[in-house]
Length: 514
Image (cartoon, rainbow, N blue to C red; front, side, top):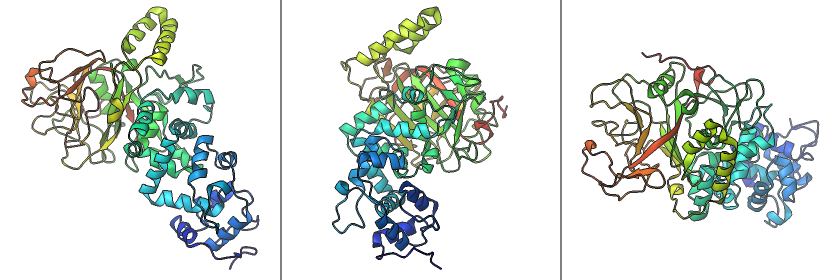
């Protein structure tokens, strides 16, 4: 039986009928949430039950006619609201004109359904937002939604979402140089575009980040209780980076931190705090409580890269088996370079430790902000998430304590089964956690060279360039004849993050497999 007052003055447009059905019906949570964004939409004594009801309510309520109204209705940054004003099509206006007249409830329902139902449409929206220069706005929107309730200081979010930091700086360059490609590099961008009209959906865009003891990480210079201060120059993974990786974590592999649905990632290892010991790194990621793990690396040249080890429920990485592991949900990623690193992070660390930290750090900030582009930086060309291609099962190699050269100690993503590690990985970290290598085109992921020079440098070059990256085969003991290029780098910092199970909530333990 239809509620009183719900009769439609005219049939709903076909596009609206299809949209309501795609969203699960007029009483679905998403449709009802859109009604709340239009406060004059519905009578107080009922909720709509058909697409015709939604059409009737849409015709009665006013259109959103300005950027300010859109921003207020959906709690969006003004730049994002401006893009929506231009892009939401009119479906119930006989003139067919949208933007100058604003958009209605029906228009919002159709736009939401289109973005939710079509990856191509979501990519298109994400690309439009990037072209409008809204990347930092999107990052702030996503990371603010997943900040802890007692960590809602806007200054903290501003500190965390640094437009010059990787991967935001690289993505901004890519969106200008290669329009349309940037939105395809990170699944989190179209996922965010799908959530613009739904405040409730933003809670799952990015995970909470916590330290090994479970305390929230904050970029604020203040500390409160168990809250640990985060230093953007020390930490490898930031909130913005976690947001861009979150949608690539396989469904069901993130641990909910509570009834609010927010995922929680716990940092089980950080070389800047736990020491650059490979055995410690391995013991943390192989603990029974760890489960799937995200490994993040920063080179001394300033590149940030890494990979995610996807595992079946109840499994953790093994360091005591000479075999590849992980499943098809595994991926590698590159975030590019933050800014020009000439004197680099190590010098700042040394001065900070010796008591000159405040002045040196301030000078370094000035140098970074004013650095010229006298050295070409193409790190933005390799930025992205690169999923398993399915070409082979050589996803992850982890070995510690082996004595035979047949089983190299180290950690890597991708490789050749007969010669694991040994420079033939999309990303490889040596067993001393000091050096690493990247090779382009490894079949497991089909990724470009994630860090280092592009290619074409001969075998004989051994020197470290001004960027801190060595190029070519600098270790002849590898014994390979091809010289199409291996990017070698020195490791500055390594982090490992537990993204599911007990490891996301409890402190790390010893290697449960030993």
